[in-house]
Length: 378
Image 1 (tube, rainbow, N blue to C red):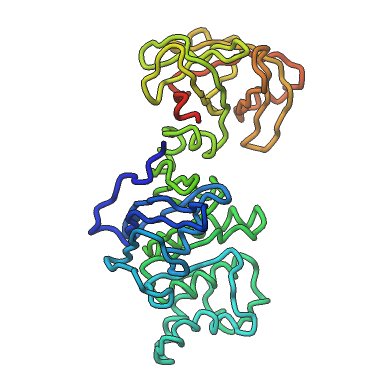
Image 2: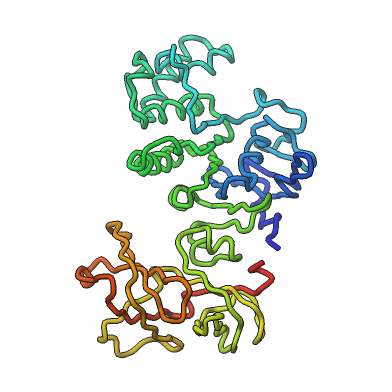
């Protein structure tokens, strides 16, 4: 069972502390006894599929929904009974909610006007903020004159000009096209680093979470299955869900046949024997689930005379070519597998002539694969 109480950051360095928070809707438990902290000045993402509870959690942090139990502390102050308009947070939504009847400057100034800030101070702060987000001198532009990326920056400027302790971002890139989304990922990361404001970002897109974040929480069924750096989640997953949800992975199920030096040999129902390092101690005969990433599988051209200890060599027929530039891969079906294995293609031109039907030899280091016991596999 994944823990809902991952390692905590020191409270004195945290802008957000969530302690034992739960939320139910009738018989459905959207968030279950969740505790975590977000360190000051960090970029923290909550990653998970639709329905996992991430939006409910963000709404509770923002004050739009009250937890059934537990406490939320922002900037060292409990938010119990504090309404959304009195919390030191601001939100950026997928649909940016810019005011179309206002120009750029008026959009950014709106929150300051509501707080009664002097007009001269508003003008100074709006101009400074627009310069910092790369839109100097655009105060008088209409919202409809802006590109999608510029609208995104105006929405962020409107939030950051109020100097919140937390900026909450609810899938803010979801409505953008792919190329602009890739560009805005870099811009968001740079903006957060420049301002030093604590960002809490929710997304179902694992690429966004990995690229943007200092730490990522992978959420599933109302709890965090793992919290860590993007590298930790990718290379050291703690549960089968994290292994399968974060990045591409080849998954196999079977039974442990033998154990040697921290690695298990897992035999699939079709008879294929695979080796991987064990996440927890397993015994022969135990059910197991094994994962190996496409880029961990090495294609062998016959010149590799020496491979590491424990490597097993397989052979399979090319079933499909998946061209995606630098992310191109090939699907290879080993005779004893029910589904083809996805293998990343090296970008050396060596396999430029590869075609469906070709026979390939391949292998992988068991240390670059991981297996979990049946209790983890579900």
